[in-house]
Length: 80
Figure 1 (cartoon, rainbow, N blue to C red):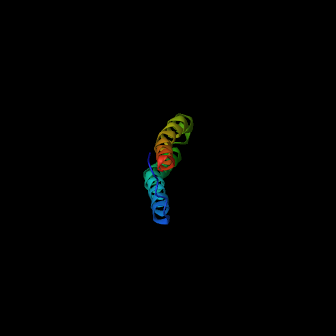
Figure 2 (figure 1 turned 90 degrees about the vertical axis):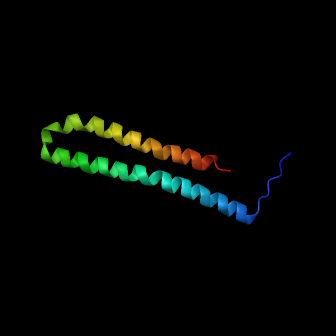
Figure 3 (figure 1 turned 90 degrees about the horizontal axis):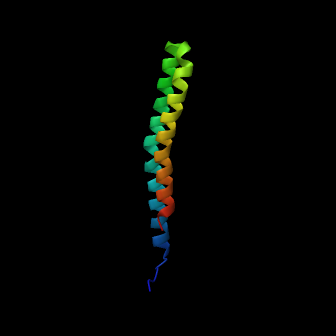
C-alpha cells in the first residue's frame, strides 16, 4: 500500500530529527535540574537544620523536570 523510500538522505534526516528532538528536549530539563540542585545546596548552606525538609521537595522537583526529558526520549524513539 505505502512504499517507503529509504534513501540515504531520508535516513540521515531521520537521525538528525531524532538528535534534535532529544537534544532540545533535554536542554531545558538539564538546566532546570542544575538550578534545582544549586538552589537546594545554597538553602542548605544557609540553614543546615532544614536539610530534611528540603531533600524530598528537591527530589520531587528534579523528578518532574526529568520527566520532560523522558518525554523527549519517547518522541525521539517514535520518529520513523
